[in-house]
Length: 332
Ligand code: TRP
Image (tube, rainbow, N blue to C red):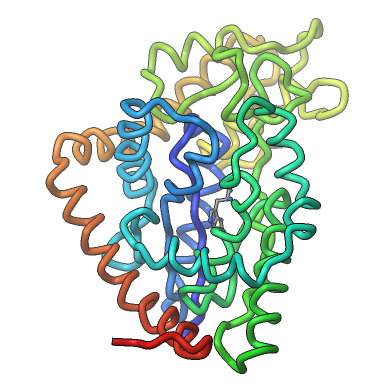
């Protein structure tokens, strides 16, 4: 029996160097295992819980789909689709709403945070977000959901809902397990290296987008914040900037940090910044080429999205129907 692994991301913000390094590691491992069935969605229904500009949203969705492929998800090996193309998500989400308590949703940390941040638009979708996410997961008889720690509470709710439904109607849903994503190298902001590099940092100099041009990448590394010493060595506490550069270089060149420290003996911070910038450009180059090819062939992207949606629907439809039948709906 193969294991179903399900994950999704929202097509909003920018894909950062930190996302790239984390994602490539995790996905390649997930996909390489023949026993895994990997399903990956662009959670574009979730995205409109926060108001989006239509043109930008549209462009972002295509761009993220191409990015996922360019970064290593293979539509031949995994199912790669847009959530909005599989209507079973919205349908199941409604059904699950009737098995979810308002109190449960009110307690969700992310709902509280986002309500505070978007106090002018606390819409029902924002509150219902975890139920739609439960529908995503439960439609595919998912065994494992690799997520960051911030999403664990939502996985717990998905499990509670699945168990509640199974308790009433018998074995309808597989109860999913949340697994913490393997954290690889933690990539910090280039301007405040005590903070994580964040996709929503207002200072563009702090963040490398995977789609930045080489010249932009070099400029950002050259102006990376370091410290007032001159020694290149790893010391995350006292030298967070230099340590961050060494971490990034170590990932890009696939070399241990102590080897790099030796290579940089007697050299200056400027050397480290330039070499790290160049190594990042080098690492991202093939991905960007693949991305540009894909974006120049929208027909192919749409074809992949269509096939992905069909494959997803083949799994989702019978699961939804089993639940509908259990509730008592007349099936035609
Ligand atoms: N809420 C997730 C996030 O913002 C995205 C997401 C939507 C998701 N549906 C999912 C993740 C299902 C895992 C499984 O990161």
